[in-house]
Amino acid sequence: MSSGGKNIIRLFTPDESRSWVFPVLFEDEHYVALDKMSHMAVTHTQLFPDRPSILQLIQHAVDSDARWVAKRNTRHFGFAYRIDFETSGITLFCKSDEACQKIGNLLGANDERREFHCLVHGIPKEESFEIDAKIGWVPGQPEIMQAGKRGKQARTQFEIVERFAGITLLKCLPDTDRKHQIRAHLQHVGMPLVGDAFYGGHLLLLSKIKRNYRPRRDGMEQPLLDRAALHYSRLSFTHPIKSEPVNIEAPLAKDMQVALKYLRKYAPPRVLSQSK
Image 1 (spheres, rainbow, N blue to C red):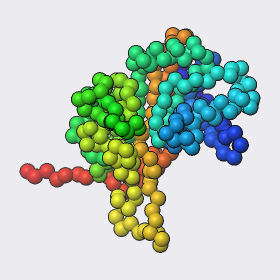
Image 2 (image 1 turned 60 degrees about the vertical axis):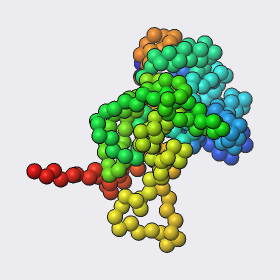
Image 3 (image 1 turned 90 degrees about the vertical axis):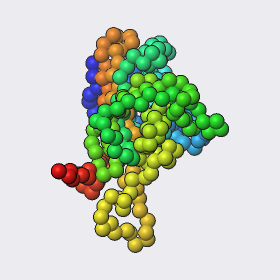
Image 4 (image 1 turned 135 degrees about the horizontal axis):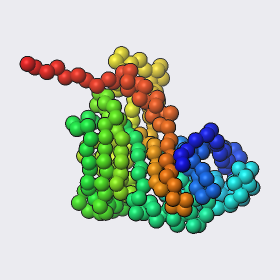
């Protein structure tokens, strides 16, 4: 079983002043996977009460008997997991309590394969590497995690996809599922995500990579990426109810595609001359 089609779901705020379009990446009678844009929360949090969340938007659609809800003949949509506010890509929702419990057991046992892509500051020496470091809370900072010798065991595999001058595109394969695992692990080894202000990353600016860059008259510059450059690109698992293989893929978010276009043009990898 795999994802496909060009189905979409449009979600509105209660006053219908704003709406967002979510491509449907996968759907059956038990689950629906949406392609989440950046700057969208999965669930509401008291820390950021003004942020929109998919779950709130879905609840409004259920309460208002939206056409797409009636079509699916269910009023239950629970989230299978959270991904960060700035992270784009796959989000999975369950259409029943049973579906939520079974997928929760599967994900809790790490019986799935998750794949992310990210841009990081720095150039790893190896084509692939592993970070095995515990992840724990930072006292007094509920939104920050820290990798090191304290916390829960965590391990992430990394593979280099493409190199640039001072920046690398990585494929990330987490073996465990800890809050901010990829972000904290990469900070731990001195390669923070591009644009990840919480973990030491810097915004990607065209002025930093393009020679003879000409600023606007007002001196203002919009970053090529205005968020942590992390994308949830693939989720594979055995369906916990149907026992069929499920493979869900989300194409790289447009802002990351644009960033890669400029990096390829203006920041190709530096070739070091070898002395004989």
